[in-house]
Image (cartoon, rainbow, N blue to C red):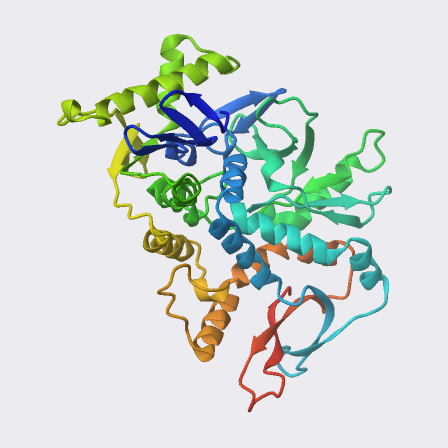
Length: 458
């Protein structure tokens, strides 16, 4: 939609927000929550592969990335979650054990040798950053391990963008392939397929592939080592619990507030109603009218018609008492169902003083931060004037708790190193550690911080 005036009585402030002066209303086109549900397990046939859909339209990662780009609080929290886990970055270390009970009592950093050269060549810091990011955003990771040319050892570890990865399964539903493609919507780009290791017996799985392909003219050198966070009821792709912010409506509320405030402050608009319209409304109308997705003019006219209809209902005393029929859909959710209304009209209070909806934004930001497991004080100030800033001691304790809770994600991200160490015949006490700063009081350490260890791969 154009951001300039499109009809006599209304104009689009943004691509998804239209101001209707006569009705003193803003129409806001939301994202349907159905795209974040998986009511049933469907498969696509893609280039001869049977592909379990990631989300109802197999584009869930793309939907998530698009939404993160439009809400600063979501992106900041998602980044914070992986940054806490990254700590001071991965270090190659050798463990020191107590000879009596074989317990690890200390470790020292390795700065030379073939293992160190291997880590430097593969840029392990970047690998960990990228993998933690995918685990934070999607709860799924798709690293690949690559043999050398002779298939004698693992030469390379690489991250593959989770947003572009899908599974390929056999007729029994067992995962056999990881499929990597840049465009899953139009399916234009070339697709690369990788055989998948059994994560429960990764070493034996890789040895079997080595035996099968070694000496053959057409070798397979790269294999996917699947990593993921547990997600009940999701057999193929894990589903972060924080996606609830998209399904509950809090995300839509929080991104509508900046558009509404900009309209009020820039255009000095009086706003009495905010109207939320699900894309499903337009999809159904376009289907009924035979309007194709490529018909830009037809789709524009459909939206303008809705704007005029709402304007006619909400404007003037003669229309008092009139109502708009709103279609709703029951969307399966677990063992029950949630309602998704096609059109929702809310009456709001607007004093045009510059501080409108601050409380609403503050509440929405706190709910989203709660869902994502991030205390707002850890990433800055809580939005709004009632920020209730915490003391340094409280923030320090909350941060240490957050560090401890990131251990499972770091453990999964580093999981391939156990396979690499064993397959490449490294010393069993050479491993990866992730040091981190633990903030303390000045009486314990003059710098106010000391080093600890988040995770060690053993």
